[in-house]
Image 1 (spheres, rainbow, N blue to C red):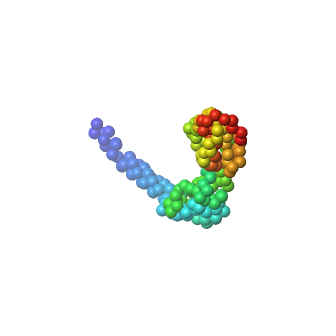
Image 2: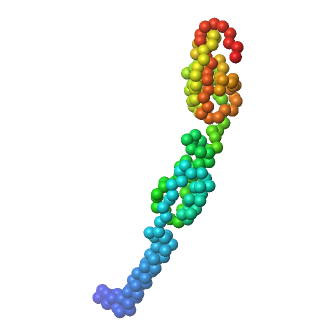
Image 3: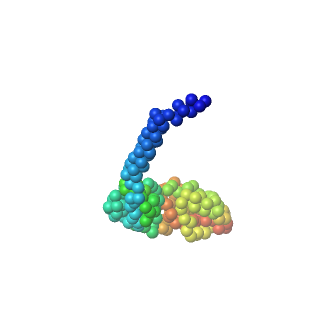
Length: 189
């Protein structure tokens, strides 16, 4: 056993172990320094606030900071913002990011999307209201006319003009419902 320990701690083996340790330390230092350079350690850019800006203004503001922008989603319309204005951004304004980071923008559409009016004629008011709200419309005034069906939808109006189920109408439009009052009679639109 002792000859083995002498051979294990011989000058040549100890020298090789020290050389391996030295190479490992040097490689670790080189790798650490390279990673700092490659990842731009402690070099940040502040994300500008582009919410509410037009798409052109947002592009100039983002690119002037050395960042890249992508339009993530443009399926929403918000009437409180101008058309084609930025509604949201990710990452948020004043965040610290690296140069060339992608900034995702949600842009306002130029108007509400068109939706097909559901078939609600001869349905009760409650059923019609649920159908209209779930489709994305608003229920406006109700007008009662003589008809045997109490609170049954007889016709639809938008801006005092009659419309038919199946027609396309902008989302969030206000639809006036003409309902039966439960008194016999015949309704003529």
